[in-house]
Amino acid sequence: MLEARKSRTFDRLYHSYQQGWLLPRHFHYVGMSGSLDAEHEGGVLYVMNHSSWWDGLLAYEAFRARSEGDHYVMMAEEQLKQFPFFCRLGAYSIDKTTPQTMIASLRYTSRLLQEGKRVWMFPQGDIYHLEERPLVLKEGAAHVLRQCPEAIVIPVTAYYSLYHHQKAEATLMSGEPLIANWGELGKAAITQRLAAALEQQLERHKAAVISCGPDGNEAFERLAKPGGSTSEAFRTFRRRASAWKSFFGR
Image (cartoon, rainbow, N blue to C red; front, side, top):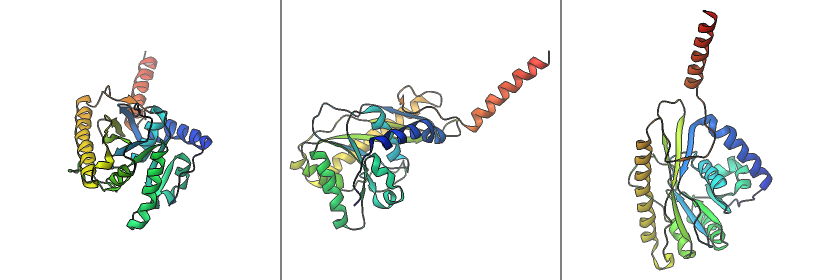
């Protein structure tokens, strides 16, 4: 497996690039509601639904902008090999081809949590459509929690939508921490509890986005600067052209 090799210098450079250019280039709005930090001295496991290639980058933006903790993100090994610089940001790999290759990553995850780190997992195991229900989770997160019974779990959901703008809007929602003596629960029971929490939160998240409508994001705090679009540029051009026409037409 590929372990994380964090670099503060690269992290600062990349965060400036993502927040100031990459996200605005592709999204009209990126926001978040809820807190990523909890009053807990031990490890924190974040479990997140997985419906887009962007999920990991949005998670990075969220914890980079809204958390003081030391965060790590599990990433598919074939993707991390294509983009190895993500190791510098805290990503590490999981090879899902066999149970044996997965064990190394799960043990690494457990070690990070036991050291008090904050770790992000996408327990669906792959990318699925945003509206697919029920959410079906693999047992990797449950395996880790049984090894780290004092860890807390924070569910995070991502939701993407399109309105009047050329670019999509992306929002994250962080839920209340899940606390249990995970070592006393079986993997199936833990997995079921995580799936139920994520699915219920995703429905609340969806309702919040719909209630905001196309012109409001009051439920979500902005994470990156707004991204312009061709339609907005055209409207700006028309306003300026009209102003110049009125001026010279006098």
